[in-house]
Amino acid sequence: MKLLTLTTLYPNAEQINHGIFVETRLRHLLASGQIESRVIAPVPWFPSQHPRFGRYAGFARVPHSDTRAGIAVQHPRYAVIPKIGMHLTPLLMANSLKPVVAKMIDSGYDFDLIDAHYFYPDGVAAMLLAKHFDKPLVITARGSDINLIAQNNLCKKMVLWAANNADGVITVCQALKNEMIRLGVAEHHITPLRNGVDLQRFHPQDREAIRQELGLSRKTLLTVGSLTEHKGHHLVIQALPLLPEVELMIVGSGPDEQKLKALAQQTGVANRVWFIGSVPQTGLIRYYNAADIMVLMSAREGWANVLLEAMACGTPVIASDVGGSAEVITAPEAGCLIELRTPQVLAGAVKLLFDRYPDRAMTRSYAERYSWDDTTAGQLQLFANVLVRRAERSAGRKEGSRETR
Image: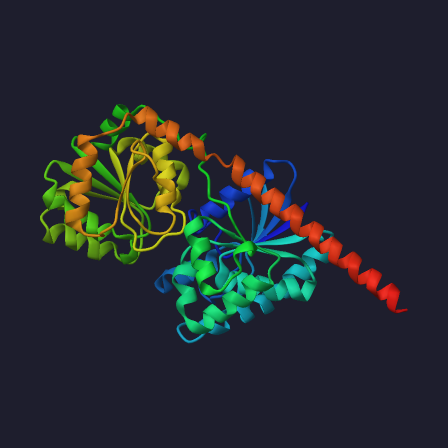
């Protein structure tokens, strides 16, 4: 089965962790030996690579083609109109990608199915391309595409059009399926396939040696994610005055970095907060192993991969009860959920988890239930069903055409 994987959520030379979960799912799918795939991961067009343009210059530096983990990846450019062009982006993206897809087909890679990730603008653009090239399409909803972007009325209409016209819809958790049903997508049209965890990449290591290397001496919390308000790093910093024997490692980068550092100074905990910066996914294992508790205080999530990655290293977690987190944390050895996103509630949860701290081997065993095998099998089955239905419809049209002659 030949796939075209289409998404803006895919790692590249400038954004090494961007959409790493899409690449990981695809790697495990390819490992089945039943799939071949090429990736088109478009990036916004920008004319200059000069550093003064920040992330836009980063887009310009992304190579036009690359190979990652043996997978061929193209990064064609598409036009983006800042601020005012949100509703035009799917059309602009689709128009930019038509010649790229046509060239791919003409060169001999005539794929069977488009595997698109993230509903807006990616999924809508993929739907336009699927109709243009007469290809079946499966779109995966990932989180903020449904929980945030689809709350805009016009975006919602386009998301619903793409969802209801696609041959299949995947959500990364049941909670996201429920939200799509609420938006107006038929329940039978949606297949929840949760993300797994790479148990070979994330595993227990010599914890004490790593802690010594990092200079950690207190009980240690860890947060991992972009430094933006909705990830809730500020709430963890604000909880530290209530946890005088605890220190915090923050892994990630983003626009709120200076604001978070200032908050640490203002609350008198700067000497207990370590800003690690951006870390490649392959390097996260050290921090997961070094931490006593991984904390995720997000305002919204789809399926938070960092939770299972931490557990696979033996580290229990505390997470806000949003998105699919309640589907990830279902036993005491995994950690606990909190309903109120406040520093006070978080501090109480940290104290309680330390009082009832699970055996780290049991936490690892819990994570082992979440390999990628079931997800891969679910994808293969869904894709096969889509192609069978497409073939049956095609055969029906041919039969009907003969009968009218």
